[in-house]
Image 1 (spheres, helix red, strand yellow):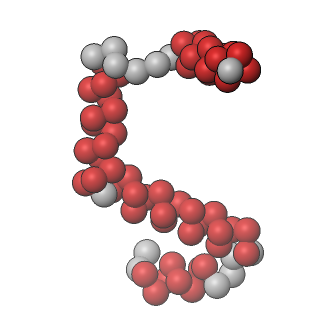
Image 2 (cartoon, rainbow, N blue to C red; image 1 turned 180 degrees about the horizontal axis):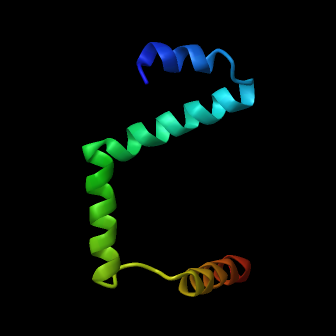
Length: 72
């Protein structure tokens, strides 16, 4: 399918469908970016090295911070 054919098909879409296409293209552009891929690779390295918080630990830290604020 050519770009011209895609544009023609887009003309027949509802505004919600066009918005979905727009979001898809933005996500595609982001995921194809070398900077994004490098950021994801660094995050995976940190996870593999154990340098991240799991959800339970994060909740525990938030509770401790809130308790400290209430105490002060």
